[in-house]
Image 1: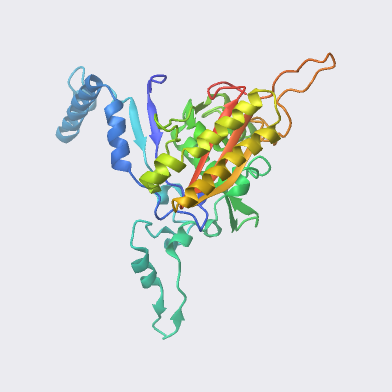
Image 2: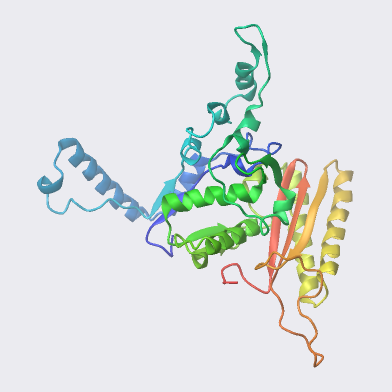
Length: 364
């Protein structure tokens, strides 16, 4: 908000980037709280001025004194420094192309929804039970186009979060990043921002979208104007803040969830010391396996998903040192890298990353 006269915040829980086995139905929905936090960011003086202008505009509409008949000085455009765009699923994925049953509200009681769809028909034939949550996430029911992110969306998190849903128009396997790229393209088209801001915590998502904007020659925003914002962390433990942290128990949140950040930090130190990416990955993996054994003694399940290191511009996995020896015996220029990791603490999947040789706000 400090960098722009107007800011539009988009809020949308996107069904197409959840796999059928993932937590769409239970994903935290805190729109009222989010809006309240945003309102607290707006200067009180400006908010009061805007409310007064809004009230005056409403009065003009109700009395019909608009246009030439409006009082001098009251024809100002109504603007606000912050607008929230929270579209419905019907807006983002129009019902004209998706069966009605795909839009059962995930906040409904799924058992009651399923009971309406299962049972006996008028003809006395058994009707197969339909999983409402699966229908919401079934991209095969969507006949509109999807943005393809083959190659640079297939690795790392894309590889780990495949949805295994066939798209109806070309039978390719839909993946997490196809859902992300599709919904963000729709949001960019709706808002047409000059600048867009994405968090570093989902670093591959932000980098994939940068590549998408570059590949599609977009200018709302341009690839250069998609900015990556450093991860916000718990000031005590370093745990990356996330909606899914609400799933964690107090013990999981304070003692075991922060282990991912700590392990990735140790891997980063290994890289900065000049050792290889393979050694860095081993150090982080060994640390997380130690935490896993410790957690088991307290009845907490910790499962390592992956630790990896890649180049931000190409998504190429790195295994050697960041700089190679020169012919003169010195070291060449260090490559930029991202140290990434994912693990499960109980039933909660956590992701995190640290940057090496570059900062979130700089261009690649």
